[in-house]
Image 1 (tube, rainbow, N blue to C red):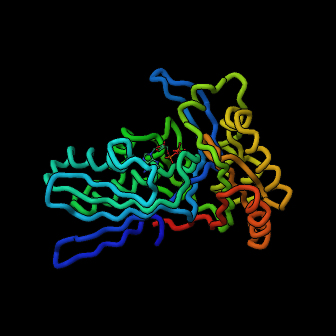
Image 2: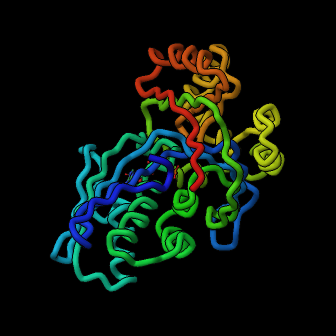
Length: 301
Ligand code: ATP
C-alpha cells in the first residue's frame, strides 16, 4: 500500500470497512527560526515518510458514538487520542448522526519524534472523509487537522515536503530516495512541549534547511547529507546522552548520516547501500530494544 492508498470493502453501495495506512515521518532538517506572537515557534523543516506505519480500520456504527480500540494497552482510547479528536471534529463539521468504530494497529513508537499520533490523526481524517463520503479536499482536511496538532497538515500530504510556520504550510518536494533508514528508539519518551519550553533561541544551532530543500529538489544525495541538522538536538541530547551514543555508533558502523528526528528521542541513520544498512542495523540491534530497518517511502500519488 502506498502513502495515501486505502482499502475499502463495499457491500452494494454501502462501505462496510476502510483501512488506512499511517506512516511515520523523519525530519531530514529542522530549524527553529523564531518565536511567534501566538506563542508557537516558527519552524523550517524538511520531512519525509518512512515505511513504518500504523494501520487504522474504520467500521460504521448505527449509533452516534466514537469507539476506539488499539493493540497497545497504554494508548488512550478517549478524547486524549488524536484519532478520537479527528472523528469528533469531522462529525461536528459535517453533521454526522451515525458513529464509527476505529481499530488502531500501532507499530510506530509513541512519543518518539516520529509523529505517530499526528499520522494516525491524518489517517482518521482521510478514512472518515471516505467512509462518510464527505468530499473534503486535502486542503480542507489539513486546515481541520491543524486544530489538533502541528504535524497533522504534513501527515495529510506525506511523502517529502518543505514545512514552515508551526507546521501549517506544506510544500511538496520530489521524493527522497531510494534509501534505507535505520530507526533506533531508546527506552524513554520525550514530550515535544517540554523541549520547546526549554529551547534557547540565542544558543541553538540553525541547520541550513533552505540548502537542504534545494538539495532534495536537485536529488543531490551528498548535498542532502551535508545540509541535514536538527536545532532540537541542543535540548534533547544533554537530557538524554544516549542519543549521541546512538548517533556515534551508527556512524561507526558505516551510516551515511545519523540525526535525531523531531524532538526525539528516536535517532535515524541513512544508508544508500542495503549491505551497509544491514551492518548498522546489526550493530544497533543489541544496543537498544527498538530498532527498525525500513526503506524511505517514495510513492507520490
Ligand atoms: P511528534 O513527532 O509529532 O511530536 P511524537 O512522535 O513525538 O509526535 P506521538 O507518538 O504522536 O509523539 O505521541 C505524543 C503523545 O500523544 C503521547 O503522549 C500519546 O499518548 C498521545 N497520543 C494521542 N493519540 C495518539 C495516537 N493515536 N498515537 C500515539 N500517541 C497518541
